[in-house]
Length: 294
Image 1: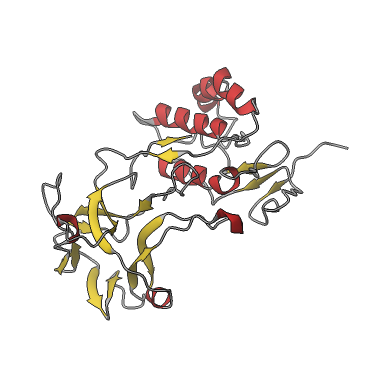
Image 2: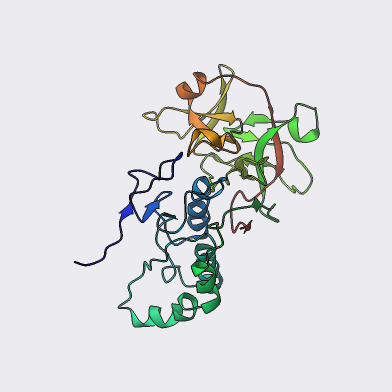
C-alpha cells in the first residue's frame, strides 16, 4: 500500500484530556488568504493547542493553521517581506508546510524558491525541543490609529465626551488625534488570544476619520448603542463589552481577550451584565501589519 497522511478539517481536535489523536494534523482555524491580517489570524488559532502545559500539537499530531500562501501575495513593495514573514512564522509554530500556489507556474516558483528552501527556516521547522512554538506576547503597534476599548470609569479624558451626531458615534479627542474620530462598525482585525505569559490584553473596534455623509447610523436605544447599516431588511447590531476568559482548563476555544465588538442586540441583551466604561486609546495591533513575538 501507499503511506498516507490524514488531515482533519474542522471535524475534531485531539482529545483535550488524553491527547488521543487519530489524525496526522488538524485545522485549527478558518480558511486562509494571502494577506497579513489572515496570516496573523490563522497563527492565533494555533494558540489553543500549543499554549498549554501539555501541548496538543506535536510529532504525529500537528495543529495546522492552513496551507502556506507564499507565492500568492499580490505584487508590490511588501510582497517579499510579507511572504518571508509568513514562511518564517509557519516554521516557528510547527505548521505542516504545505504549498498553496500553482507549482506549474515557473515564474512564481523561481521567485519563491529562496524562501521555501531557506535552510535556517526549515531547520527551525524540523527541530523538536518538546514544544511546537507559540505566541508569547503581542506588542503595541505604532502609528496604527486608535480604537474603542474597555477602561476604568475614572473620569479620565479618554472616557468622557463620547457622543452621537449626524449618524456617527464620535470619540473624545485624545493625545495624538488631530481631528475627530468615529467608531468604525465595519472595521475588524484579528484579535490576539491571551497567553500564559501575557494574559491581560484586550481588543476593540477601530476608530477612523468621521464620514461627513455616513451611509449607516449609530443611535442610543433602550440603554444600548446600536448600529444600522441603512438597509431596513437588516436588524441593527449592538456594541458590547465582553470580559476576558482565560480558563483553559475546560478545553479548547475558551480563552478570549477582553473585547469591544458588535453583536446581535437580542443576543447581547440575554448575556450577564457587567460594568465598564468606553475609552479611546492608541491602537494596539488593531489593523495593519501587526507584530507578534513567538
